[in-house]
Image 1: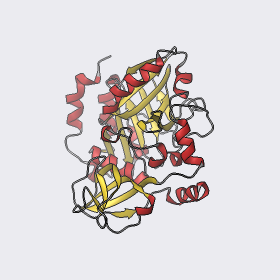
Image 2 (image 1 turned 90 degrees about the horizontal axis):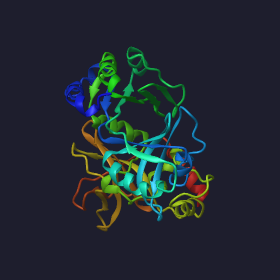
Image 3 (image 1 turned 120 degrees about the horizontal axis):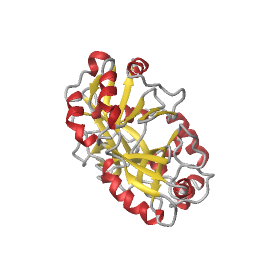
Image 4 (image 1 turned 60 degrees about the horizontal axis):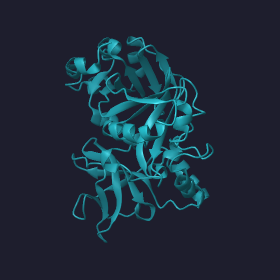
Length: 337
């Protein structure tokens, strides 16, 4: 099998010019993420003691969001976890692959489990818009019936997401042909527009600049099924559980808007202009139509202020926007407190 790196130039030509606006259905190359494979007889038991999600309850042909924390409950990575033929696959920000392999490797040495970087094995695409089903059919791919489910064939994976979008995983034997078939019904689009869809879905992500900056509930991960409070111990579990049951969470993720076309980088501070104090940090951001949309972790008592700006007290003002699970989050917070 040819590594994807050897056909990268050919793949790049498919995405050089954005044509998605013409077709109403969008296909993006998810180059910003990489993949870790965890395999071996003890892979499940090993990951169950490392991750926030309940690995043991993850069914075949299904996926879940999750996080890996340090002992203080701070996230070293966030990811989507799937079962594979020989273990598990975790997709996460590409710059976190090497440090996570190094850190997890310290613990994997005590288990019959092996870790490897599979980023060069999989072409990962994001598909969303008006004709997702038609585009998949043109590429002889199948959309899973329910969000979170995965349809698997040799060298192919299709993961259905909560908003009707899907991730498509192709090995190098399938990459060029299936991509061309998908592009018959979907326009090539930018990673920025995939991130914009992710922001509107309220799914945050740990990246290099935000490494060990947030605990899982700050990214609303418990609302997205990425934290189990029943599975037992894992690294950082005591801090995560304390935040949930003692109602001590003072910061969480919100969706914000600002005018302009310059998206702030992750970890950019959000500042209260009146006091000059930093009240939060950007998680991810992307440009929309004449404005920037972002997810940011803010102090809850500052989220409603009309004096918040990005970068510094002279930066552009930001305004609060809705998240799709906002009402559920409000109810759970009230219960916890």
